[in-house]
Length: 456
Image 1 (cartoon, rainbow, N blue to C red):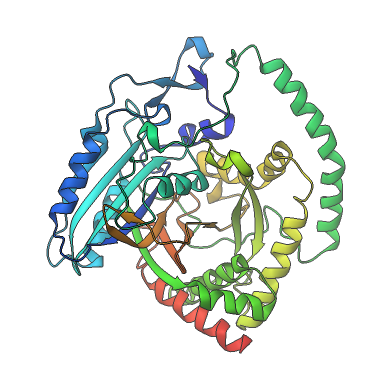
Image 2 (cartoon, rainbow, N blue to C red):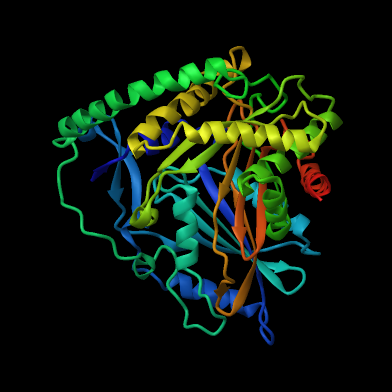
């Protein structure tokens, strides 16, 4: 039995019917020449036969008196793969529209806490000789970076390569350095002392950041976000929309404007949000503020489970009609925010990021978003993905799209994943609070075209 880290346990503590705390992924595959839909049935049967489950995917969450009421992981000795792996089909005509409707429903349901917290759905019947795979994994188990690494490990890089183990099978895990066995309760005093030492080193940096924020109009702090139609109570029902965008086009804008690719993603999102909110007659006078996660993983740590994520705030400049000035404001905001994290270790960045993420958690759990100040309006994430083509039993992965977590007070989430020259952007929203979220896709298209014009 292993105690869960405080960061990971928050995703269980904050979960409710209205707030499922799992992330997901949608993959589209193209059938190889000469193959038919039976390839998916064969893949399903092969997966059910992979019963040697890796420890990470055989553990389930529990808490008891022995852990003093804290969440911990326990090993499930009888993983029912027929529960976790499911085979289904789309209704005719099998358009992307029907696929997104099905994925929206699947993403709305809670994972069973009496079992390991993951599911995989193989979906046939997609038009154009394609099929889809939807996976979901509780955020307490793994963050997006780790999930992307698992995806890469469970697919092959060549169409005729021998079948590789599924992500939950023992053979899919990369070897890790052995860890010394210890009692987590006995190690707590040492851990606490080390944490206090790190926090003491962080104090001068906090004072510097506060001074810079007071002197700079470009610095964005929790509590500065305006109220908007996105910052309301949500239901448990989801609506999901996704589309791919050319990374070559995005890189061209980034290079010409002297900004990062992530700045371009934020600017595309800001332009789409501005257009969408104007259509809804709901654009605030003040600029929306985005929280964007930053990965704290380095080297071998990229393969580990759990969550290692910091956060920065970005001014989206949605009150600015000119796309060039909007991009400049976003880049200035993110540059200042990232500068505050330079030279800090993982614990210090986590502590500093808590000033960004903790207000969101408090607002969401306690319902303070209805009356109090907002730490930010929306979460926009960018998860790097594989850049080479990947295959499942000879079928090429043609599209990769992430799904994330709306919460009370944060009714829509934007997450992007790069793959083979494309940026797949997924919009996960509360079905009731954010109507017609699919219109945001056209806004992203329009925003990218506007940015290309201003840098031409």
